Length: 56
Image 1 (tube, rainbow, N blue to C red):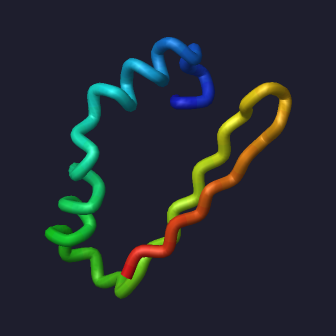
Image 2 (image 1 turned 30 degrees about the horizontal axis):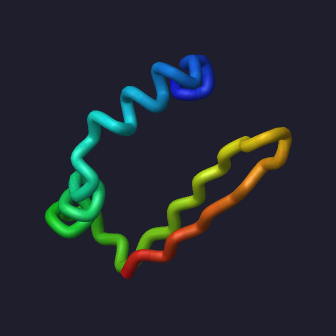
């Protein structure tokens, strides 16, 4: 779904999210995983950048 969205639509979507929503969800959800790894890829000026976050 996200891959098909325009840059403007993606920026609007992520600006509308509460920055604490994901940490709150992970803390409160009973999913049984002791830790998480999130990877974000973004393209800037023809270069692809990767950011990885480990959360315990």
